[in-house]
Length: 282
Image (cartoon, rainbow, N blue to C red; front, side, top):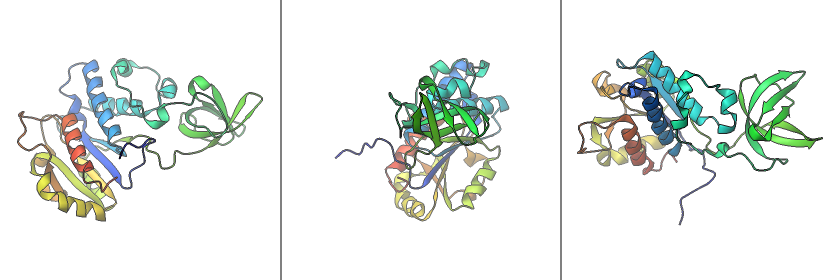
């Protein structure tokens, strides 16, 4: 029996990941920072994360925080409209080092026909129509108003005299990537999702091995609307500067680790793999 599903389904419950902008502080060059962002972005997409929230710890610089947000948003944007959505700047000069995500909307159709869905970039609007850039397909006309500069999912409604007429659509129950937000204070993130009935989990070397509390986590997630999973940076874990009372669970997914430290991008894979086995968020 194959468990591979394509297109990938959305998760039944939201999965939100939070980590500090300081994940880039150990990298000395833009190229290395870009590679690090690429590793994080791949993990977020592979595990169908809904939102990536970036916060500021004592080691985070504003520059790294903004750069990480930019690179992750760039990655999740369909390649055929990236140059429109993100004109190349010095911060994006090394994006050739980013690995492709190959999310479902990233593969554009070979042929344009009625019913085809695609993400487009809204260039301009006037007279009740918007000009939407569709990559190598060219342009389509959307007879609706969408804010210029937006990325919109559209469907080909008709083709009239070689003009592609579009209508606003959606990808429905298909997973299409993660949103990226900066929320400076970790406590604000936790309080927001706690008030909305999410399970709050801290991944930390100071936590209890997940194997000992898997049943408790499963039961808690079953009752919640989703999960917020928090990771630390290269120098400090949130366990060291926040109250443990903020978390429903503090878990260790790499017991008896063989290295003195585990990098955030490594902990991300280990923790999401362990929680994926619980299946409750699927």
